[in-house]
Image 1 (spheres, rainbow, N blue to C red):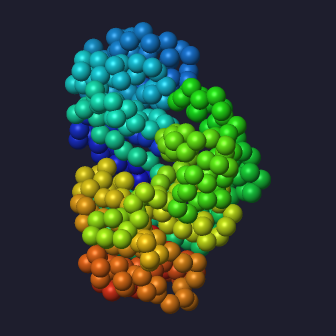
Image 2: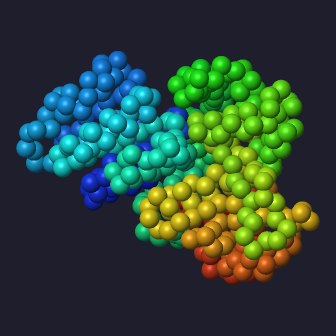
Image 3: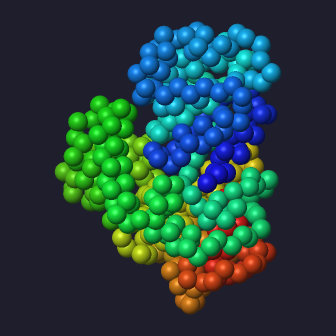
Length: 402
């Protein structure tokens, strides 16, 4: 199936000289998307760091790649070069800087990676101005119902087929298990993926030796998904110090196993400040239904805010709301650092609207407040036409995002 990111990258390569960085979890579709995108050009080349022959060329330097791709020749179209998993190369930033500075007018470059390509920013960004970062996510309700490239944040609703909706909830949004829809295959797939994460990716990105303890942490996080993190309690379970635990969680975030959402504190005098909530990139790993549905919601919202930001629509953020009086709403989405809409996720639409939606909408002057009902039938209405708290079908609401 065609991904929305193919269209996004095709547009980037046609309009911009900068390299396109495509970053996301293992097996989310980066390689397939990059190959489909590059094949639109009559001249396209693929280099994978995990291929020994390709690795030797990359180590040899930019000139070696330029020679084999014949970049010095005049052609009717610019060649597209895909560099896959190159972040595993110790000198990958230096290689890309030299290659881009020398050959930017003779080709277009697409770089993919399953570890976060932006993590080196902490130490200075030697590639500043030479790339745009695009973050690829698992499939979502909108992308399945309609993969056309949006020109604005909120779109008109599109109905997803019931079987597709159930498959997305059950098997997650990673393309292969979603398309297979087979329980036996899914069990094999998730076991193999976890093994690759800890035996290959973790060792590639760090020198940590306590693999078994980090794997235990990952198992515990599956049970803690959608809850606020208590570092000291988790550290006691894993038998490590709290700073070590926080470092390991950051590592798991860099490997796209999990992500965190911080509490919103601006304009809330008694808000929580230091307690992030933890979610998994693959909500299908979560057994508890309530936690899975909240994680499903968090994943869709994170995909939306990162996609909108990457497309240049503005600066978007994802937070949750909770104060010391335990008044809580699951999610707050900000636009250009101002509250835009709040979301509460519920399995059933028969429950009354949470009073905290009213409280926080008034407190923060939020334009929209939604309570999502996962069992509510699709309705062909614009959820964002309402300015007071309203119960909306999950199928409708998520189809208006990305």
